[in-house]
Amino acid sequence: MNKAPDLRVTVGGVEFANPILAASGCFGWGVEYESMFPLSLLGGFVTKGLSLNPRTGNAPARIAETASGMLNSIGIESVGVDAFLADKLPPLANAGTRVIVNLFGETEDEYVEVARRLRGATGLDALELNASCPNTAKGGLEFGIVPDVLRSLTRRVRDANPLPLFVKLTPNVTDITATARAALLGGADAVTAINTLRGLAIDAEKRRPVLSTRFGGLSGPAIKPVALAMVYQIRRALPIPIIGCGGITSARDVVEFILAGASAVQIGTALFANPLAVTEILAALPALCERLGIERLADHVGAAVV
Image 1: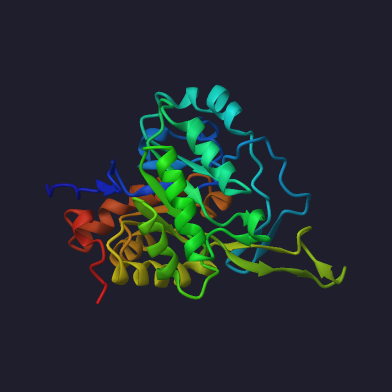
Image 2: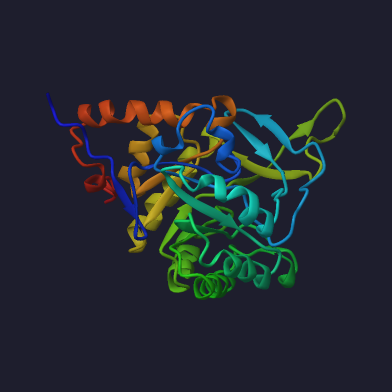
């Protein structure tokens, strides 16, 4: 019998049993899925976006189905950091998987305060900085659009908490390598690429946008080629680990992201159609690796980058 492929990967100093992570905003706080499968099957998961104070998010309609994907404008509904530490984190103590907290704020100071309050919390393995939130102190731009702003934010969060720091990059920029470089210079241990693309859906009968906020974030298979291209670009340009994210629905998609330069992947929108998508993809991955002659997945990170 052939030896099973080694699926272990390391990203930013964090070792994962396999490269399959559940993406932020698509997996709740983790415990919601425990009745479906053991969380220990996953390499890890990223929590919903965590804010300093509780947030209700945007008014309906907040989700719209599109061809090969979906638009969302949830507005990052959150319980707030205090409730997370008191109620959401303790049940994850024996989850048997890596727990990554996605954090955000409306100002740099809020980001920093969330990171500070998470310092020393038991059961956390890494932080994911959501750099696609409005920077209200700068007039409503996303923090992740302007490299100097992102570099400053990353450095301040880095200084507030010693946990490995992953920066989730917005694709709504001219050059993804410029913002990835800013994250690296700010002290990030890895980047997650990519967040959602800005999109719009129109209701022809009502003659107005479907979403209450007009625009939303496009995710799902429709954005996979864009995500792959950006992972590839970052891998060619910078010595920073990458977590690939965007439209992954199969084991083949996972391998494609690995070959493009990602060390691990996040699966999100696929979970809305099939809550077991992450486990089914993971179950199919070893056989695909064997067929492709991949004995150790980590050895093939960026193998297609030329």
